[in-house]
Image (cartoon, rainbow, N blue to C red; front, side, top):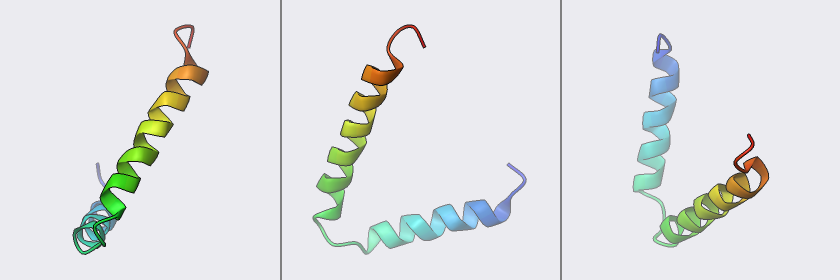
Length: 47
């Protein structure tokens, strides 16, 4: 929380996404969903 540079980096990434081409959003959502599925399968309920 004491790293303004990290916050600036996040804001820069957000700005980069704001001007990104339209296909980046659905692709990003698919990648995020895939990561969640893989994490839920590998992590499981036992940790």
